[in-house]
Length: 427
Ligand code: PGU
Image (cartoon, rainbow, N blue to C red):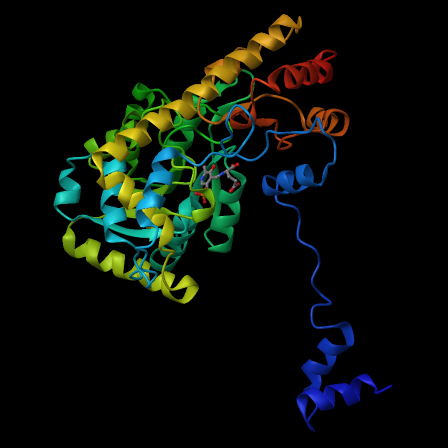
């Protein structure tokens, strides 16, 4: 048998590996690599898939299912695909993505007749869904304001922390959720906004806050916006669930519109994962509202330059689906109807889950299930209770007690309620 040194010489020539190479070889190249921690959300899906139980229920990931528990391709998407079929040009999109898709996407956030769009004050690029939009912004923030920080709500979507961490932007937190009332900690939030240094960056969920399902009221948004103005803070809106809060994308843009009315220069991440069911197509948009067109041109060019060495340009297929739907009034109407249908089914399941728990005689209050909005119910279950649900009942959810209501169906709601009752009745 040839020795490791001989093999190394064969592969790397007479000089062998050199000192660094020899060290790497002695431990294997990746000997120092430890397995990464499981993702708190996507890891739940992995565990669910590995469970052979016929009774298993997945209310972990925020992905919509129909009442049979099946993933959904919207009718408007199927029609757009029919139109694409055979005609698809698979050439590269420009670095900034599909102009037609972006135009329509901006209208959803900034308003159909927005002066800001007409005045070309918005720097916008197609992004790899909502995650990619957040990451692009975080990298842009670091590059041009390297000393800035980001204030993130407690709690938030777990990946927000990873995104700003990997962009090397220091993170601070602000109060958001009140565990006793299971509602908004408005006083705590406003204090944190007031106490942050002037000109701080804040990450805000535009609607249907993940994981809590708790949004500020319109009046509270107005107060937040006012205080941001006083403090000259920057609001970055993550809008991953437009349409899922109220069933109407226009109404769900209210927080953003209030900030625009007040003259803020905002940033916004938009995603079509949930509201068009385009999860795996990775289609979204990052926009940064600028002072004028010249500034917007400069900002857009820099966003493109950040994208270029990472993925060069974004994928074409999902962008084409979105452009076809939003540029055709009939298909757009069909989409709006389908978004409402998804939101309504979730609302129905909130009522069903609460009623089931109450009819089992649970002495706990489950009012928050129907008070909260959007895809998730922040149930108040402890990590231990969640483990109990998973181990005994094969029910999978994130350990923070978040239930994806999108995975609850007429068929499993009784089973879910019964299991929740079993693990909470002694508490
Ligand atoms: N922002 C928020 C607030 C989200 O909840 C999600 C998705 C995203 C952005 C990113 O979505 P994109 O698919 O990149 O558009 N959260 C889901 C999906 C699973 C995950 O963690 O990515 C969730 O279950 O929380």
